Structure formats: structure tokens, C-alpha cells
Image 1: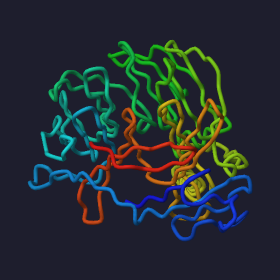
Image 2: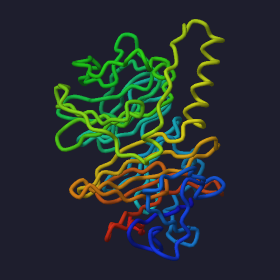
Image 3: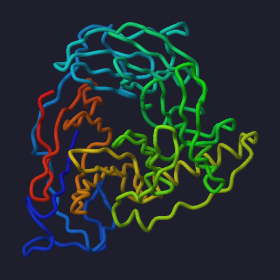
Image 4: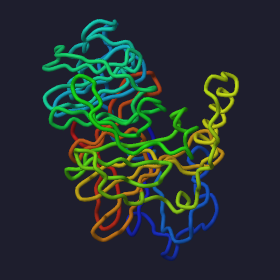
Length: 375
């Protein structure tokens, strides 16, 4: 995995200082890391971390029992790494040694067909099966219980467990519950729904080709929404509290998602045409797409996919110091999992080996860097 680190106010270079190669209103990076146009008020310098060394934690694949495809989702807790490629869930320790397979593939209790989400739920590990439409829970790596719950497609993000309830965000339009946020009990009953999907964006909701990030923040449920460009806050009863704008790069602020009229989903050909149209709009034409938001040591980190008319967008993260209202930019990995002050990314390397990177973000005098963290 390659990282490009960006520093403001310190580090290698600041564009406002003499001797820096300042570029305004033009491409700052070439090739797959093309950021497009960046506003004049951004003070940015880049450090190419191809020369920045850190180590992978390679995961054991010495036996056919250990093998799996590229991770679809993963979870890292205080001692173990859980990875799912949809078909199987493998458990490894922090040194990469294989522990066991969690559950089995099938349709019975504790079994799954397409495990798309792995999440922590109190003292258990939760799994959502997007094909069988059910939640499965394991305690001490053994099956505990499961219950069915229908959702259109997968879930946008890992569910939040609070008391005896789950809070979930649905990727796709569910006519029975046309809401972004649901509170359900441990039998699958919907206790309350919040934030109804507006007609303006129904076509996006049907395809699920946009991002919502769900997290628990300061004893509140936070729902960050890519289309609305806002973070909505709710209490645990899903009463609306307030909303705040997403912190974003300047070019994201000026982008407006076009309204796309809803079509009859029964018209398969028209639906397929619109699906690919929206996919192209989201994945390629949109210059900036919100992906996720994380709390970090009194800061908030907002992750975006940036780049217009490119096949691969670069990930830009904004570290926002709320007290001083200052922003620092970091360019790097995409699938960050935050645990305390550690960030983790699990993927396949160029030799199709599974690995996880453990690193932390250091914030010193308005500069940002990644350093190796012991797993």
C-alpha cells in the first residue's frame, strides 16, 4: 500500500513560504493521485511515502483452511483480528497467527451465506448476512444466537449496539421503512425510525451508490450523509437533536448532487440504465465524495474520495481541530478502522497475501504524519 502524506504549517514544505512550488487552480498530483483543482486558500505540501517504511502484519495462510479472498469487512479488537470475504470469517491474533473460522457457511443457526458486516456488540461479535438477511452473534468465538431482519442490500455501516438495541443504516430503499436510520431490538422488530428519505434523492437511494457513515459520538448517534453534506445527531430514542455541516475540501463545498428522477423499478432495462448512470456519476464524475468520519483524540477525521474523470480517486482525510477550528490534511488509505488511537487497514498485497497495517496519526504543530503502531 502506498501513502502520500500531506502537511500544513510544518513538515517538508508549506506553499506559503518562499522556495515552495506553489500551484493554484491546477492539478497538484499526476496519474492515479490526481487531485484536480485545489483552491488558492489551501496551503498544501506533499511527501511521497514510497520511501516511508513500515511493516505489514502478514496473516497466516500456510494451510488451505486459512485461505480467503480479499477482505470485504474486518474488525480489530484488543486482541484479535476478524476478517470476512463474504463466504467465510477467519480469526487471527495480532501477530497474524490463525486462530479459527468463526461459524460456518450454510443457512442454519450461526451459519451465513454472505457476511458483509462484522462489528463489536458488548461482549459479542456481531455479523450481518446480506443474503440471508439476518444478524448472527458469537460470544467467546462460539455461536450465541441470531435473528432475521430484512434490509434492502447491505448496511451502510457497522451497527451500533446500545443497551438491548441495534442502530442500523440501510444501503438501499426499503418501501416498508423509507428511512436512513432504524432502531431495532434483538428480535428484529423496528422500535423507531428516523430521517425519512426525501423524494429528491430517491434514485440514489434505490441504487445505494452513495455514502452514509453511522457512529456513536459523545453519547449520541451521529449520521454523516454524503448527499446532504451534513452530520445529523440523535439521542438514543432517535429524537432529532441538531445538524452540522461536514468539514470538507473546498471543491467538495461547491459540488451539488444533481436531482435524478425516480424510475419504475419494474422496468428492468430502464432501471439498469439508470443504475449505471448513477454509478458513473458517483464513482467518476463527482469530484469529491464523502466516505466516513471518525473521532480521534478531540479531533474529527473526515475521509473523502477526490478526483474528477479518473478511474481511481485518491483518499483525502481532513483532521479537524474543533477547539481551534483548524484543518490539517492527510492523503492515504481508505478503509481505516479506528480503535483508540490506532488506525488499521486490512487488504491483499501484490502477491495476494493477506495483511493488516497498524499505524497511528501524530499531530504536532499542525503537521500530520503516520507512524508504525505496535499491533
